[in-house]
Length: 133
Image (cartoon, rainbow, N blue to C red; front, side, top):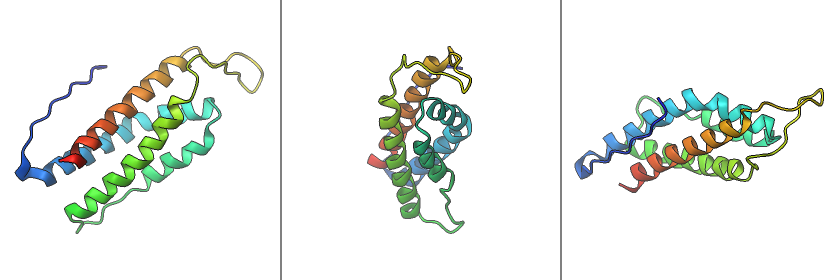
């Protein structure tokens, strides 16, 4: 399914719930989009930005974590994702890719680049809404 539906219900008494939902969505984003984004970064020669993906992989909450710890984790994730979006936004969508053998790169690169940027924007908006509540 390639649709993104925004639904927002403001419940001021449920701040921890909002943060937990944001954490769940961040985990789902990592599970679904990490590999595609990693390939885009590698194909575009932005391998150094892959360190940010590794940092996201290392995020961890202890079993006794409070909502303050959760908020801090989500703020760290938002910072790294924001930097990743900046890197992805500066990759030319029609850049010429070549394989190690000098052959043209994959034709689908442009599609993967746009998809990764859209999904990064989506998860950042989710984190922004959760952290602004």
